[in-house]
Image (cartoon, rainbow, N blue to C red; front, side, top):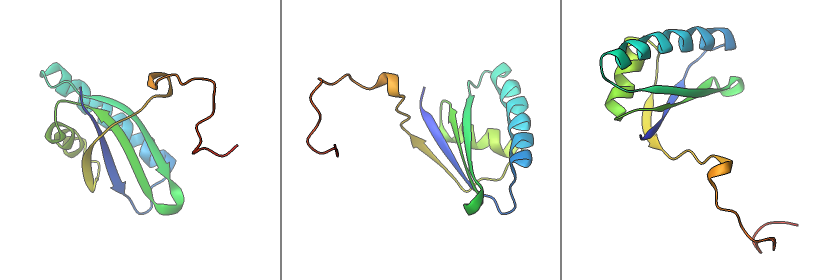
Length: 103
């Protein structure tokens, strides 16, 4: 299933407000899942100094992710398909160090 990043430029956001929004989002996602729209919330990163939040979801389309955020009444500025590379999914390299990395 595709992964999407939701960018939120959110003046005044706090960790507590973000936690409340995530709870609301999970409730909406559960309803959407029961309705046959498979969405999964993965995680969020809050950058307090920039008043920005990046949230990662899996879902069938950007439109489905948009609907989930709108129904949960969580502000967002942009939803874009993203590739999330987990460290364990990366190929194993030989023991020699790549020449482009510092020693």
